[in-house]
Amino acid sequence: MKNLFKIFTLFVLGFLVVSCEKDEDKAVLEVTKKPTLAGDATTLVLLKANENDKAVKFTWTNPVFNLAVVNSNALEFAKAGTGFAGAKSADLTAGDLSRTFTVKDLNKIILDAGFLPGVAANIEVRMKVSVGNAVVSYSNVIPMTITPYLTEYPSFYIVGEASAVGWNAGAAQMLYKNENISTIYTYLESGKAFRFLGQKDWSPLNYSLDTSGMQTSNKYFKTWSSNLAAAAPENILFTGASGMYKITIDSDLAKKTIDVVPSAINNWNPANLYMVGTINGWNAAGAIPMTNLGGGKFEHTITLPAGSQFKFLGQQSWGDLDWGNISGDGNSGLIAPKGSNGNIKFDGTGGSYKISVDLKLGTYKIEAL
Image 1 (cartoon, one colour):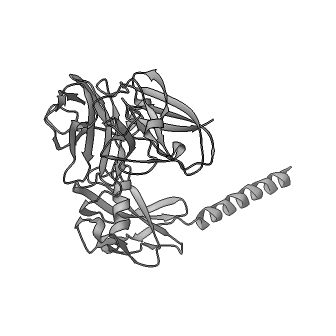
Image 2: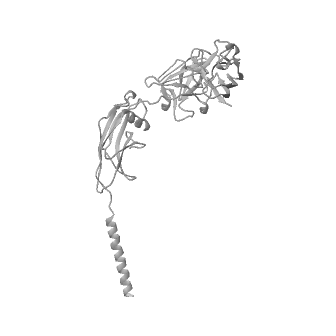
Image 3: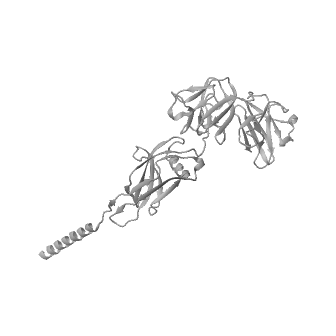
């Protein structure tokens, strides 16, 4: 029995010795020298015209560890004073020790981080060092002031009780956009409010007048025509006479203007509407009648050969009531009055199609049957 006890005791002592040796063999990774980061510019105004030029060059030193490991680096860009919450990262090659960002590359990073184009932003930059999936160190923080530029002009969707769509965000009508200019010919009702969305939804983008009393997130237009007024806290009041208007928005960052002027055709609800074009040899006297659905809406089902072109007339002659594709020949889905339009160019294959027109809204559709 004593021998068994001695054997058991030796076994326990041996296990403890081995366990202690294993604990001593476990090495803990430590940073013995922190990484450093430097940049050769602190204030930058980025311009699209210079997007291929150098913006800034970052240089760094890697951390020193007590063990031989392979680390990976990334730059983090964040709003100053936020503790890098929601930071935007850009991966680095740790062994390169420097990286140059072009204006275009840096601009994308800053916009993706949530900063507004045309507005100087106070930004902090640091380098994050990781080993595997674990972050093991950060460099010093570099403060920068960067003004990014707009890479794409916004789209505008009209909505509101003053408009033909009412307060239905899902039915908001997008304006025709050509670079910084957005246009639509549509109905506005006097004494009622509207605004613009950046999408067919209430969020995230809304655009209204940049004036006192307006919600900060909705402030956009710096100047506007005299028939518009603020309907705080978020809308635009139309004060002109009810009727058809041309709305023009210039979203150039230096302008941000909105002008509302009477349309060349104020009649949005004619008794008749006709189609004329290659479908009938451009014979206005023999223009094809459409079905009046009421409220300025018309439709007609027709066989359209490929490559067809046509317009809409309010009479069977080349008179004043003349609508075609907005801003020249094409198939935008938006109409414009005589003097400001082109032919509607059918770009589908031949077959039976329903043509729908909403003169009040300022739109048309070509739908295959």
